[in-house]
Image (cartoon, rainbow, N blue to C red; front, side, top):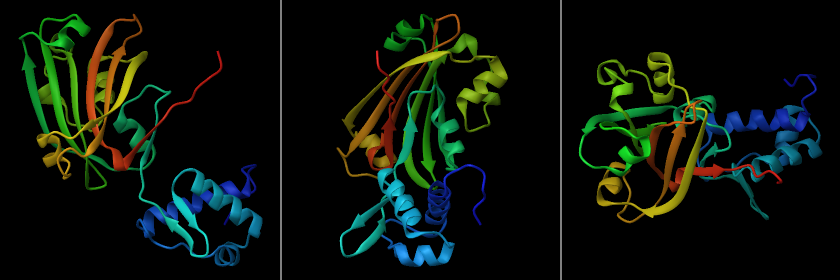
Length: 236
């Protein structure tokens, strides 16, 4: 079952258990005991314990003294140190992110994003998204309408960033992102199937092209019980 490819055995077991959890378990389910996993996969108890420790460290499972190891309510892990759209990241993690509704809004009046992007007319793309069938996020993406002619007629894929690249040769070189907590508005609560004022995560990102010009602004709210933000900090 496990290959001798230089990857530590405990890590291979951890990845296999992770796929089993995604396919066959829900939050609160009890995993087999360490002894049962040891016998089933033909590995040592030390390997099993280290694999379980890794799953626990990543928030996939929780160990309860005298009771066993249980599956935790899952949160999406988003590594914010690499630029890329939320859709692109989740697809790599084998999550199914779907657009349930989309609205295109042309903005000609005064708006703070027009000042950020230095343009006269904005196109706002407003999407309500589900993750594996569950309400997940409300996304607003703003861009200079002159840079994306015909977007409303041609945008048919899930990843807006991929579409920017394929259709308009727009790519992002770096971005500034702000993350904060906010209470769900009545509209967000209804769309995300949450009680009013439930804590949400707000992500606001200004993306720049290779010429260091601000090109796109996104304003996203996400269910905080389904999401965690990971940032890698480097020494100065």
